Length: 256
Ligand SMILES: NC(=O)c1ccc[n+]([C@@H]2O[C@H](COP(=O)([O-])OP(=O)(O)OC[C@H]3O[C@@H](n4cnc5c(N)ncnc54)[C@H](O)[C@@H]3O)[C@@H](O)[C@H]2O)c1
Image 1 (cartoon, rainbow, N blue to C red):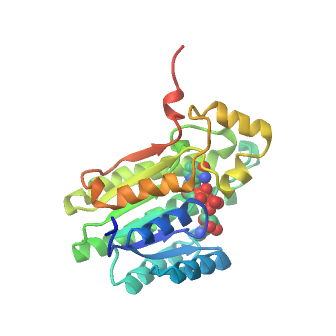
Image 2 (image 1 turned 45 degrees about the vertical axis):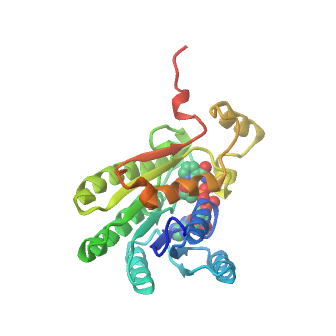
């Protein structure tokens, strides 16, 4: 018997990277999963692979940067699954630019995809859970960059800081109804996002490792395992928390 047997889950941005690992783990633990992405081909491929393995998975092409589309996605997931117990807000993009080069469009797009989508989806999920008495779990993919800073990732840092506050605020509001709200704060996990924006040179890789006491990047499955924990009854008294999985990066801020 899986840890998420029969749970009805929506994963926003689940065709690749961390989101994909979470979709696969949720399915393997017995959940029925709707997942979205802007990568239509990748999403359809994953849906076909999961179905071939006997999993209950549905792909929906949807842009997390458009609030109305996010609301429609939540409604579609509820319709497909006959309800919703679990929401994972995983959409995240990073614009790597100096402060002086950032445009309004850069700012708006990052905030829309990384933060507003999580607000809109969580609000829609909360409305459904409250109306149906569902004691659900809402999880958002934050980052160590919610509390640390990389100067050329300014809009990313702001969006993740906002996600942490969104998590705590919703947790308090929804706690009396048995709905738990938590976040995960990965350090450096080897995905396309990191290859494109962080691991841009050998020197950049070395700099990242110098800030990673465990001496290695994380694997997507190491993040999915935390998502399963936060989604399942194993974390039944945990709410309003950000669980950091960063190979020791946050505690590295020691005195000498
Ligand atoms: N990889 C890391 O080291 C790391 C660290 C901290 C936090 N995170 C967070 O984890 C989450 C996933 O990151 P990842 O590294 O797996 O990224 P990734 O770039 O490897 O994959 C992201 C997925 O999201 C999809 N996507 C992008 N924009 C979208 C949009 N507007 N609407 C719907 N889908 C969209 C992509 O097509 C892709 O399938 C993000 O929120 C990211 O900020 C990642």
